[in-house]
Length: 118
Image (cartoon, rainbow, N blue to C red):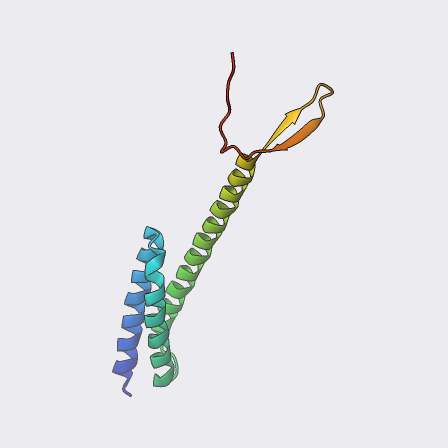
């Protein structure tokens, strides 16, 4: 293969990494799987071309940046999942206190509504 082919693959990979970045920043995580398949094919093609060129430095930096963005997005998703689990747990129970000030946990089950009586 010619060096031009390697440069073409690197340019395609660079463009794909920019699309991947935009998808991550837009929160369009469903678009990442097809991009990952395309990225894998481009990396395989680049591996078959020969030794990496100087143009790979920029591509590596963009790939690392995107990986950091994906890790941050996953951290955010995990945080939200933990918070939702906490909210569900709190909705299912309620702590009351007796006259001695001791906590008494009670389990909910009526759907989370409270009846007020005058």
